[in-house]
Length: 111
Length: 443
Image 1 (cartoon, rainbow over the protein chains, first blue to last red):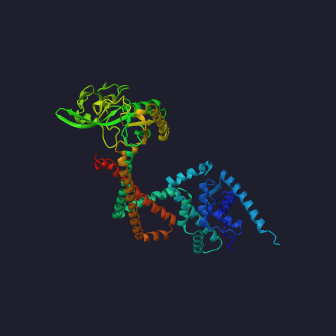
Image 2: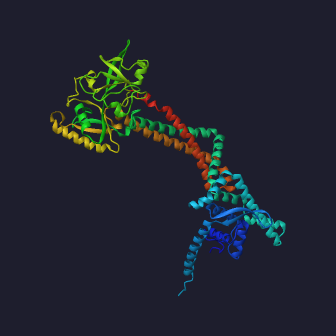
Image 3: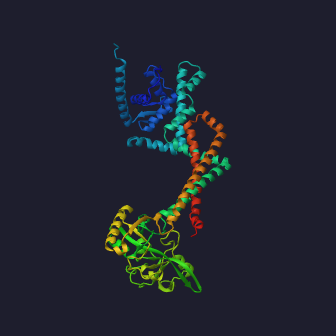
């Protein structure tokens, strides 16, 4: 039985896009936010977070900017691009239909 | 990727390709920021400074691996890797010169042998005639008889083909002959061709001095004692005389006026022999025994070529020519019964050395292929032996985090480097050997 924290392949990209759709964040904060929102269910290792961010940036879905953060230090902030927003809509839609289909099966009443 | 995506991605890729240091530094800064933020958070939760730090480092994992994976995500790492591998490959080759020289030599031999043989095949069978235009549309023309092998055809039949066939551009007669040439006190036999008047025009060769033959100069018994001479004859026997045009010269006791000098590098249209002079068919009697044959449909002496119209296959032209042949059989049963006409690809031309060279060349192609196989086997053995010697290096590389794919890429790059050197050497060998066949087969 797999642990619940194991992310479905490819879902991490969608989660990152969603989190960045709410507000621009730096890499560390994205990780924190993932843990918070999922109530600790989703443990994304920081090691896979950064390559994922860089990949999304290469795809043109998120954009990185060096900005000063709260304590006046330079930090790299990621934000969603226009095509990133479209991609998020597409992925959310397909996730919703997939998860609806799966829960439909899982919740079948046994005779 | 869509165009929109490239709009964002292209500047990034260019940046990581050309401003690699900056991009790498950014990545380091980003990860350092992460650690600092994590440590700060751990401290605020009441951890000791040491614990905060070690916990943060532990959570992040191997910084080098993350950096490598981010570089891969940037997508240009493969280009950088390639150049890195190339540099490393060159270093490797220089570190073991014995191995490198041996492997490159093997490949040079294998590739060189193949390139040489293929250049011979091209030169002798596919495009045998230097300077002749559109040789892919040139086919050889012969007569056929049911019983004997008589590869020639008659002059009147040739004219009939020229007149009747719609699928061909031109019919060229080119019959090898010889003549005694005496210049000053020096006489020797030289080789030349009896040709139709359209010869130079049809093969697209323009004499470098004077002119070729004009329409009509191939008719009338002994009516046009004119000749075009080869560049070599002009240089060797006439000392490159710039006033050569209009001078007379005896070919086999008939006085000819020299009207043209063929361009350098044109040797006529006969595989295995270089032609030194060309005379129009009207002068045939001076070189061939048996009287004047231009009006005799039964006298089969002409060797010829047919230039097909663009897009016409040899089979289509053959059909048309066969129709002409059967009509000639019906109209002139006395001379033509049982005689057909046949087109041949240049490499099967029955009246020159192409068809005799072909089996030899076929064997050479096979031998060269085997030489290449052996060379490859040798090189792979060498590489195998060396891979044992490099096992330790590979183990270390794997241990410090190189992926198997990455190692494979590096080895492939090294192989590519070897074969590039081998190919360059092979091309040189082929270039040096391109005329060597002439030495082997002096005819």
